[in-house]
Length: 238
Image (cartoon, rainbow, N blue to C red):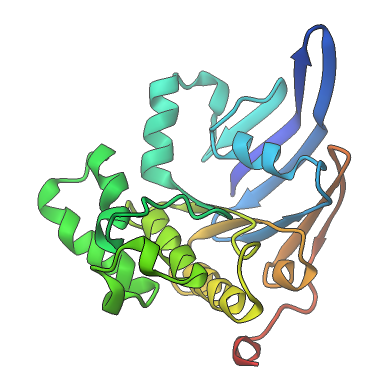
């Protein structure tokens, strides 16, 4: 059964009477528990697509179903609730509070959730442990390396127990070793924890950690292929 389904969605922007098409008529579906990479050059529509799938923006036309329900039927408050409960976001720029501890950064989404406050401490520590940063739990994010900051961002995305994680160029600001660490964490979350992962990337070696690669060009879907040779676990340490 499809978890995310888009049918002929498009996105257009209008500025002073000039209409710009960011996405053409795109259709595909994502099964629960799948790991999909979306590739394409700058300006191909990757981030626009992620914003629509993550309920941060609306398509101009077409149909989008999230977990079997058409998104157009939701109010803005209902979309916000779904984002908080079912979606985790990881961005290239980390978006951490700089003078705040790892613990407080990761706990932040729980302040806006319906999860009882009595559970916040355990959920925060469990999320930090999942990215192997328990020894940095009370460090300020400004004291961390780039790779560690991205691991904090992943822990923050995990803390509410989302079903799907949208990762927008999560290795873009990292060196190759830190990038491999981040991809191993995402693979483990997918293969061991069952999270659906949708990864935006321009790097082929990063995309090949996924099961499928969707390629965009000029706002249009150019291909949707199954990865025949995924990176193996032992290659993470090379």
